[in-house]
Image 1 (cartoon, rainbow, N blue to C red):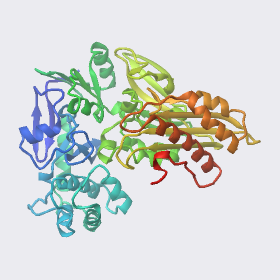
Image 2: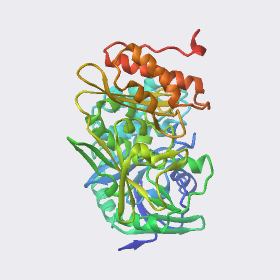
Image 3: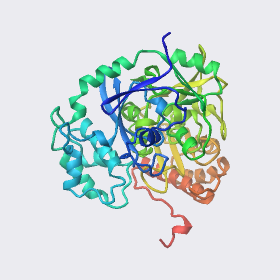
Image 4: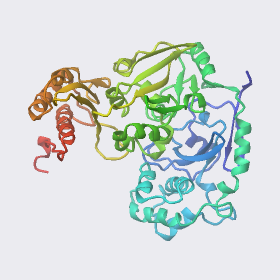
Length: 492
């Protein structure tokens, strides 16, 4: 096996080879401190505000594509064989403003300017990937970019105006250099294992999935980093030591997606963005939830496998996947085992994962035609927010309108994503009617004893969970959802 002690990538129009860097060195710090590219700003340092947004280009089956990412929580060690593009490189080859930049000027899309570089980067990525974006596409691309001064109307107008200009070799330097960039990235991706030693610890980039299994078996204390949307905050907010680190975001063997009549299987390295097409095709009910997972940058970086492996009780994907009877495949060395996803979560901070064992894939069986399925997210703000609770319902009825089976799962109601076993048992065999639902609301109190925290009180969580049961029932009956209001909101 080939072996390197440095990573190689493109930064704007320069080739970079780095060694000796710390495993927890963020792209934002490296850009601003080491390279003095200060157009990229630090705002929240947790991937929420978008001031740090840059574009990262990678090859996928020979095709070069660029995605917006949060440099504040992206680690330098994840950049091997990529193209990092900062706002300083988004003007035209002749030095004039790009179509996006000029449209921001013409439509007064910037006031204080602090958020503007990140907004320009996000819109430039959209401009390259979608020549005719709908307003909803523009809004989705800007979910991860907060602007407190300008307001979004002129920014959206700027995006619409920019779309009237098609990116070409003459008006965009990224398009003009596509051939050279593809050639460079192809050369960087040599299939070698990378090991970088530093005073702060060791960084590993395995050559492939088999090499990952070997490395993790030898270093079970290592932190596996896929998208770093969670681990990044361990560093920037909790100041945790994470070395040694094994980066896996480059492994094509973990990015496989299978969609057929039996269901969907996702490799653990599939991002939320990449997973959306297959999952929404198989489960259209997931579309709204999927578009509320973080902002565009977080969905481009974060992975479904990482969301599962970290075991957060408020992760957005486990409740619907548990309700859909998903299974997870774990690997340790050459050995694999598959278990129901619900069994993977044991208690808060503890999963059924042995030392040296990692999540390799998750499989979700297809929905049958006669299934009622829905998922809901409750949060303080609609977009780019952590769940106060997340609910998923999966119910089948027999020919007489009786509940044949029920799978109900909640996140944010316990120390782990957890099924409502008592409620499921109470529903099974009962008629699907208003009286049954009222009884099911009461049964939820047997399944969960939620905690109060800054996201929501225990009382609010329980009432919301009970009301979501009603909403699900009414939607299955074709009636408009009626939600009981929290007492604290009675006079609002």
